[in-house]
Image 1: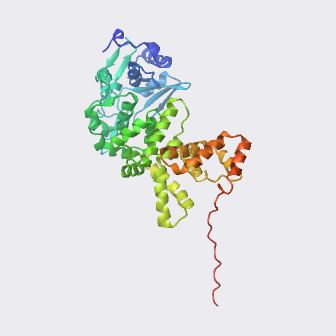
Image 2 (image 1 turned 135 degrees about the horizontal axis):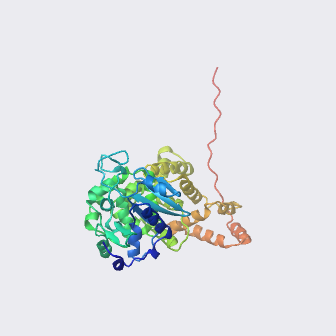
Image 3 (image 1 turned 60 degrees about the vertical axis):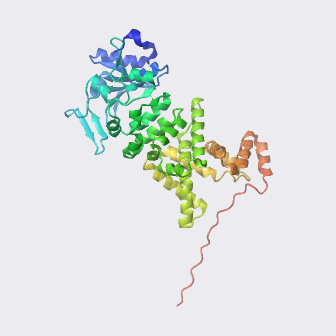
Length: 432
């Protein structure tokens, strides 16, 4: 235990709503602590985004204390205390899943050791042992304002290491997503992964195939929308974790490690980081459009060759297939797959600029994202589209008259080529 005078953390650094939750639980006769990332981040001089609470009250007991409470989760029940836009997450202290079961204590594992149900409650010491990394097993007590360190988390913070609590192989098998969390924490906190924690990553990477695609979508957003996407991408590739998220792209990258494909994906993540760190908007539709672009082109070529389809028809069919294949690994919501489709479609229309086509294209909701995607392709090395990218850049800077002049100056360029249509022949009359 680290006393109030030793750790230097003040209650003023915590969310007032989190403090309210702690005192309400305390007044209700329960133990309550702030835990995990909020303590870790303050010790590292960072501002926490979330404040999580752990208590010995069960989810149902928490719900009775707070009218603004909703219970969520199946694998482990949690209470969300809602204060407007802020949510304070309250978890009941977890016990070991080998504990005797009763109607309120349910634990279930898969054949691979993955925890499927985990509603087993326990003491604070057991809860600390059940947490993933030592830096996340720090507890701030509202009773005496001390920090309880059950897993040498303070030492790990000082050493700047991500260290698994318990046997890494067992803990990764319990929940393979911990491998993604190890990467995310390492890049976010500018720490290294401890050797014992790092060693099983490549061997166990395929366990991510057992994680529900919807959960992996949430995890990819955390990896790619936190301002450290480029570093996360490189580390995921290093440990073989990227393959379970985007197997088709991973194969393409392996076949040409220093090629255009790798350059585009890395540049996309670098641009994403710059936008996020500048507090600009980023849409997951753009990220997934880039990540699935090269698998899309590969499927298009295959369909053209195998089924003798036109490029347009093959591209349309390939979009359906690449999104269907991807959904087996990451369940991207429809609002983002529709956005990716629009970005891809517009790539084939950007050189069709005659008449009103250029103006009408700019009125498409996804035009700006599609234009940015064209710039990304050029930036990554597709220099054959440099002139087209320059034209659109100039066009967007012009007023309406200047845009009309630019379209007129194209002459016969920028005219859409009609799709070749096959004439249906009338059936020959049958002889009587």
